[in-house]
Image (cartoon, rainbow, N blue to C red; front, side):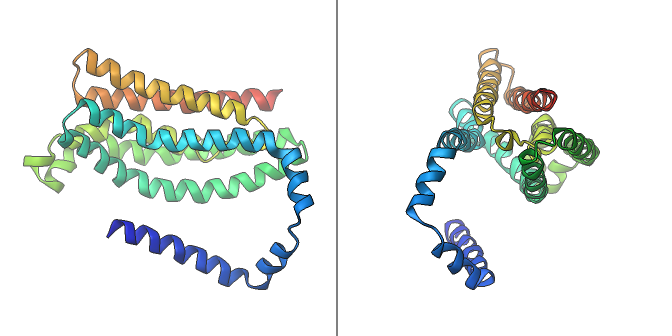
Length: 245
């Protein structure tokens, strides 16, 4: 059912795009020529390669924590993590995607004009507003121990509230920095890949440290969340540096 639902929703989106595009889509496709593709590959091939590698690493990073936790901890506790992540990350992802699409368009336009002063101003303005948007997320996550157990059932889900609280840095980092992560429009995809690898390494290191020190599942989630936040923070600092340069 989940597979069919995901497939149907994807094709429904594609169908809507084709219908709404109408003749404009066929006209645009007719203008695609082999020499244009070759020219684009020569001009943007290196950037596209770095972007592809960064995207692959980002996809791996989304699923790696669950695989790492599943290899070291009981499936019941891992189930707590997955459900709490789904409850918060899904609505946040919808908001972040919508905001990111708008910001990226503006950022790309400013970067092409080399108007870095305006790009920096917009970036900081959006980041400050996102910081305010993080406040209710922090309140919901930290109050998890109070409502998750009674809501889902104390017998099986009592520990999920503490897991949700431990995931606070993970959600804050994703909401605060992910929508405005625009190193690609600055032509710095290699830095994107480097920091993505750093974030994944910090996540893995946090989970491993908690397991080796026998600190428990909640500590492992707190460590991986903190590692993810530090990775997002590194991207933020790099972007500030690139603006200044």
